[in-house]
Each structure stands twice: as C-alpha cells, then as structure tokens.
Image: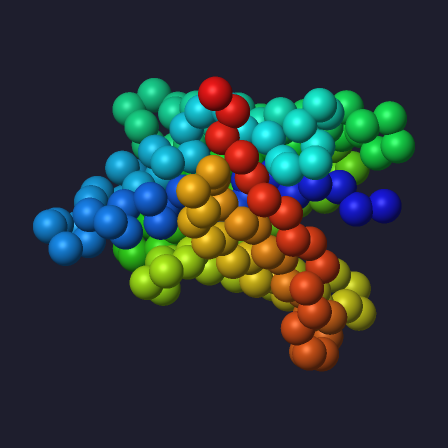
Length: 165
C-alpha cells in the first residue's frame, strides 16, 4: 500500500522555491527559504485524513514536520527534519515513519523546482530516490522517482500538497 509522502517523504522539500520570485532582488538566506514549509498542510484528495504540521526548532535552525494519516486502510505517522549544510551548500532532509523506514536526502533548487536525491545500500539492493517539488498556486506538486540497483527511474508517487487555511 502506498502512503502519502510527507515532507517526510520528503518531504520532501518544496518550500524553498517560494523565494524564486525574489531571485532578481537578492538571494535569500537558505533557512528563510525553508520557511515556506512552516505551517499546516494536507494532500489533495486526502484532506479528511492527512495533516502535516511544520514548525521551526529554536533559532530557526531546523524545520521539523510531523505528519499523520488516519486513513483506516493505511494509517501512519512520520517526522521529517529539514536543514541546510553550509559546507555542502545543500539542503538536508531526514525522514522517519511509523513503519520503521527512514532516509536521508540532499537537495538544491534548479531554477523552477527543488530536487532532493539519496541512495541507501540495503543488503543486495541499492534503492535511489529523486524527489522533485514544483510550486503551484495552492502549494506544491510532489513527485518521487525511484531506481533499484541502477535500473531506469520510475515515478512511484505523485501528489499535490495544499496549504491549510
């Protein structure tokens, strides 16, 4: 069963594009870009069961997101932590969910979308992820592509996140 991705998944991490409209004036502080995620979110067509809240850790150093899906067929919770690595000049993502799964990704803004990537060695498999987050008027479009053991990329999740009022 497929669970809605949280910024967790990955949540990825679409806020950062919100400053694209400010690019002509000055580059924002990387942590300011993460501020786009702060607040209450849901996923289109799961509005009644999915909620995600993202709040700053003290000093706005990390953004912590907690998601809950109460869908009776596939309930679950997750925690995501977004940050910025000045050494690598990349955004960081760590996600953990109630199934026991976790992953760490690195991300950047490519001019119109955010892209986060990561890979994990797990026994004989090497799953790779690429999360693409593109801004929309109501929130952002989230797409997860995966590759197993170097095979071609395949889209495994596509959803629209909506900011709750």
